[in-house]
Length: 484
Image (cartoon, rainbow, N blue to C red):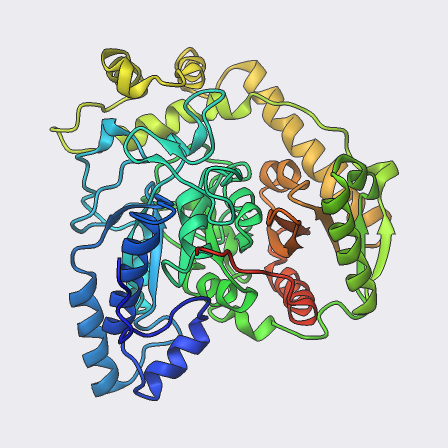
C-alpha cells in the first residue's frame, strides 16, 4: 500500500505535540484521523497484520471536523481536544460501534448508553477512533486461551515481534495499537494484569488506577472488587492527561464515591523531574533471579537509575508475601456478568451466563476453540456471593494483599513505593485495589520490551506519576517497534 505523504507524521506523536501542531494550524483533528486510518490500513490490516482494531468508528471523521470547527470558533476544550483514542471492546459506546468483549455471542450488540469512560472522553473532546480487539471476555472464559485471541476478532499480534512475541492480555488490541502508533492513546481495563501485561509487553506506560478512581459503569464486568479502566500510552505525560479526563465520581458506580478528595482533574501537575529525589523504594531483588540474563540486566540498570535520581532502594525480598491462589473471581463473575447481560437488547442471543454457555456449546467450532472451563466453574456458583468459601477467600485476598502485602512492606521499611521487575506486583495491586504504573526500561537483543512497575497505597497516583515521570525523563528507555 502506498503511503499518502500529504498526511501528518503521527508516529510516536504525543498528545502535547499534536495539540501544539493543531494550535499552530499545521494540522487538524480531521488530518490526524486520516493519518491514523492510513496507518491502520498499512499495518493493522496489511503488512504485519497486527489485528488490533476490531472496528473503526464510522463517524470519526465527522466528529473530528466538528471539533476542528469548535477549536476555530471557541478554542480547544482541553488537552484531549481532537485527539484520537481507542477503547477496548468491553467498554460501551452509544454509537454505531458494537461492544462485544471480543465474542461472537455479542457481535450484534450495540450499547444503549455510553459508558462513563466514553462519556468523559467525549466531553474532553477526544475522538473515539474505534474499538480494540481483546482477549475474549477479558480472558475469563477458559484456561489456556492465548493472550489477544477472540472469536470475533482473531489473534492480536505484538508489533515488536508479530507472531513471535506474546502481545499480553487482555487489553491486547489497545496495547498493540498504541505501540504501533495506530492511534494516539488507548483505554484498557484490568481485573488482574490486563492493563499492566499488554503495556509491559508492548513497550507502553500503563496505569491501573485505584479501584473507584475511574467509574466502571458501562464496562462488561468480571469483578465488583477488582475491575477498573485505565490509560495505555507511549509516555507518562499522556497517561496523566488521560487519567485526569477519566477520574471522578459517578452515581452509577458506588465505588467512585470513595474517590471524593482523592481524584484530580489535572494529573500533569504532579509530573516532576525530581520526583524520585529523597524517596524510599522497596524492590524484591530475588525477582531478578526469575528473569533471563538480558531482562535481569535491564531491570538492574533501572534500579541503578532510580538510585542516580536520588531514591534510596531497599531490598524487601525477605518480607514479601508468598504467592497465593484464590478463586474469589470465580464467585464474583456470575452476578456481575448476569447483571450486564440482562440489560442487553432482546435480539441479542444471550442474557445470562447460562445462556452464554449454551450459545458457545451450540457453536463449538467457532466458540470453543479453547473451551469454557472458567465459565462453567462460575456458573456452578450460586451467584449470590453467600458461599462461606467465597467470604473466606475474599477476606484472605484483602489481608494478604494489604495487611500482609503492600501496606505491610511500606510500613515496615518506611517506603514511599514498591518497584517490581516486569509486572511482579500484579496480584498485590489487583487484589488490594491499589494503583500501579508500568514503565518501559528497554528492549532485549531480540527486541522484546522490558518494564518495571511502581505500586503503592490507595489513591497514590500523584506519587506514582511523579516517580514514573522522573524515571522516564532521565532514561528515555522506550524504543518504538520497527514495522518495516
